Length: 555
Ligand code: NOJ
Ligand code: CA
Image: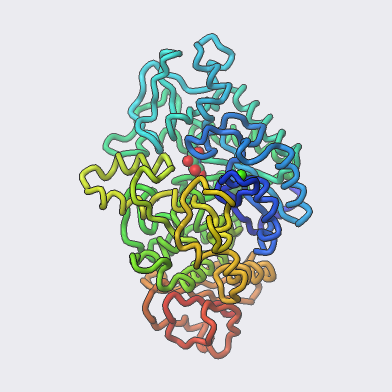
């Protein structure tokens, strides 16, 4: 049994190491750079770090294609350097969680190299081989099946071609997973973020998927598959021996299916990353873009808040390495101007977005650079983009459109926007590296950077620090119940957190104009009687909210 639910009071910082900080001068972020910056992470006020994959990988999907589960990619250091980072993080009171990617490996993993050799190989059934493919599309790169000349069969890859899916029905594969868990737990890590964990059990016979639905047509046959909860229970058992923490990534999960993982007799995860709230301006993030709709965002937030209250615990986030920067989507960056290098209300909207999610019930996650208000990049040609899905989308979805039109969509949707080097200062290469970095630096680094923001008491960085410290000090903000007001309002997101009669009211304007804010009857007079504990404008406001204004009142 678990000793504690220690993760509930925490907040986490996500590191996508390649772009975090180059410590050894080769232009690639690494664990030497992480070591240098642990104090910065601690000072932000978080309590833990989630590392996106650090393992050896040919980088077809930047680390999510693993070729060795028990080592560190030579670009990032080695196991000794990892242990150094882990010890220092622990000394600073930071937990460390690793990314566990077990739906697939790299095609360069020794298991796959063996498996391709033939049907009588000991690794033959480690992957999913068929003589004839079904009609599934992959999520990152074309059809979900690739013919292998050596074996003379097709293998399944739900993601990129170089990411063959493991056959989790094979007990030997599950034993391997348990060995990997133990390897990292024995080293001292505190838990795992489990990549596309709801996809690991596939329906028997792999039936054809939905006709006329692109990209996710096979999903009904691999999401929450027939044996998922049995397999999850096996992994949970190992994790319980170590009292470690498990956070699943649940693409396209619904509240109902998430609750099976998060509560009740089958509980196998402590939290799950859901995606509903990341679709207030699109469907499936990368694919179809729509104008931002605040009501859609609020519906998603509130659905998860209500359903999990008292039963399970939310993982709160607005950014990670899979989504473009949030200011460019839900903040003022959604009104792009080629004349400005940061949006007009860059600071205001960046801070308001922090308030919109950090004070919900759950554990907040902050993605590297989010705390600085980093924004999307615009690259001149599709050849400049690095991510496999940017390339696929450019070629697959927008063929009818002009090059400009297709690039515009890529600017809006590319995962590369969250993968540019972190902006540490205004020196060359944004202080990320002494040499030319592996990927483009966002040209706004002279404005958006950690050094400038350290020095500015009104910066987005300092505002994130205030938010995290306010949350940490208040049981109401951590454990309190959630209630939303005026869900139909198109500009204002208003919610309450309450515990044993004490209340906070959180009000966020998503408008770039001034708007009058309605106040619920029970909060009448709050602007005079309540105590304003946080606001993203330096001067006191009125009943009319300024562009992207956010306020928190204690009542
Ligand atoms: C989710 C990861 O976050 C993403 O970066 C990756 O492409 C897919 N899973 C496949 O591993
Ligand atoms: Ca380096």
